[in-house]
Every structure is written in structure tokens, then in C-alpha cells.
Picture 1 (cartoon, rainbow, N blue to C red):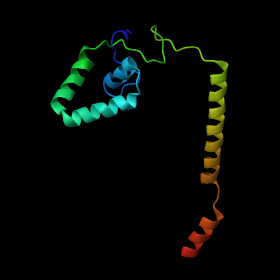
Picture 2 (picture 1 turned 60 degrees about the vertical axis):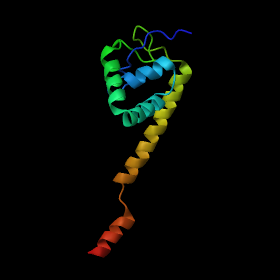
Picture 3 (picture 1 turned 90 degrees about the horizontal axis):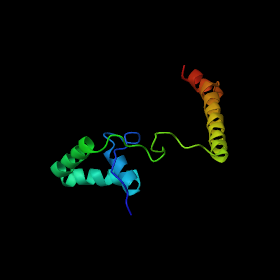
Picture 4 (picture 1 turned 30 degrees about the vertical axis):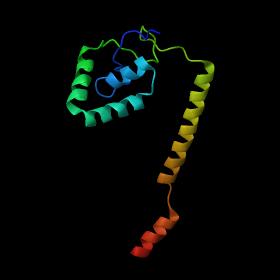
Length: 118
């Protein structure tokens, strides 16, 4: 099975996009790749650091995120995913309103304690 050419993933990358590119290329979780890279850096510092640097400088910079097609366009969203996103945003908005109400409301017990300290 051909995976194609390795490409950096600058969209999801943290430093040079090497770990995110490896994650896309081998279809594994980017967190596992990053943990493996940190372990390699600790255990074989000069070798792993040099390999990372070479890959970051030599690899194709035209990499794209797995979330986008080759032309760099985002895929069309389904009505279900849009509805789920809206529901999540409504839930977050309601929680933020509750936090705002709590923070800006007058706290009677706190005011009483402050008065007792005077």
C-alpha cells in the first residue's frame, strides 16, 4: 500500500510540522508521535534532534491537514455536524452566561463577612 510522499503539516504542527506530518503519513495519533519524539530526543539527543531538523528543512512544505483536500479546501459539512456544532455552542453560551451571572451578582454572604471584618 502506497502512502504517498511525506509532507509537513504546518496547520496542525507545533514547531515545524514534522510530528503532525508523520502522524498524517502513518495515520497514527499525533500525540503518540510527539511523545515518541520527546523520548527520542531525551535518549539520543544529537541524532533525533538532527533528524528532526533535517526533516523539517528538507520535507515538502506544501503539506496539508488531513481535514482539507489537496487543493486546500475544507470539505463540506453535513447538516448533522452543523446542528451538533450549534448545539454545542448553545450549551457553551448558556454555561458562560451562568458563570457571568455568578461573577457579577451580589454575593450577600460575602458582603456580610466583609462587614463583620470591619
